[in-house]
Length: 51
Image (cartoon, rainbow, N blue to C red):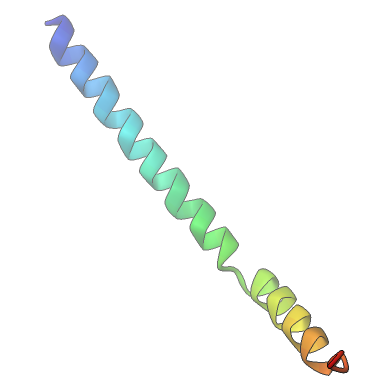
């Protein structure tokens, strides 16, 4: 019986971690961060090359 409870709690913990990581990935892929990356990219593009 102890093994069953352990397996169940372990499984639910894994599911929670999976959902949390999915949520965090969605937050990271939000438009705000994409815009920041694009701004940085354009700034680097506009810098004169030091050759």
